[in-house]
Amino acid sequence: MTPPLDLQHALSELIGDAHLVPCPLPGTALSLWLLDADNMDRAFSPEETRRILHEPPYWSFCWASGLALARYLAANPEWVAGKRVLDFGAGSGVAAIAALKAGASEVVACDLDPLALAACRANAQLNGVELGYSADFFAEADRFDLILVADVLYDRANLPLLDQFLTRGREALVADSRVRDFQHPDYQRLEVLEALTLPDLAEPWEFRKVSLYHSRR
Image 1 (cartoon, rainbow, N blue to C red):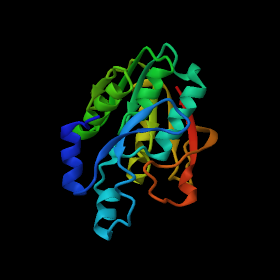
Image 2 (cartoon, rainbow, N blue to C red):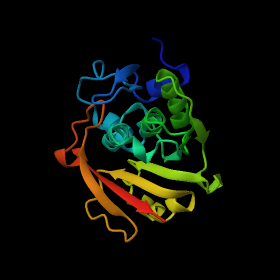
Image 3 (cartoon, rainbow, N blue to C red):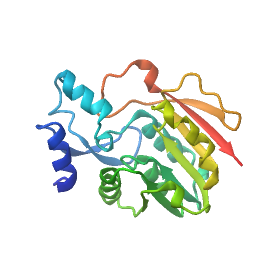
Image 4 (cartoon, helix red, strand yellow):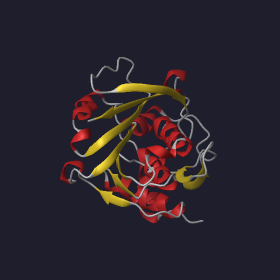
């Protein structure tokens, strides 16, 4: 299976010998185009590590919170069945695709990065679903039943977004493994899930504990 050429080119410019391959996600019926773990089974140089973590092709990873949220929706389809859903900061599109597979009537993958939206399109095709796409959350109408958010709070500068999600949807589900002092009066923690980032970046164990938060207006 040939990877999408635009995504492969972007990845090769960042990490020369990297390849995108279709990877099944453990604990799900989904697959994504991800960075080839076999070819990248070596120590990253400090510069490569910096690029991956700070200038990342984040759409070529399935981050732990996204995987945890995808599994949660598959196990609890009532959250999305028959609903209009927007996946904020969609990245690879894993949560958006999981929502459609779980019975959502419509899912929009929203991301500022054109490459991320291209990855969402490629991954939707890989999984046989059709998503909608948006590059501007604030240009969307207030018409969604649920806003999904995974792996967005890794940058604490994004915390104020918690106040904005319910301006476009009735409810929000936020999956996060980074913020240990999460405090927001409108969000309640539902449970703690376990997952890891794929391919495995050997992140600390604490980042494999994914908290799921819920808010409703």
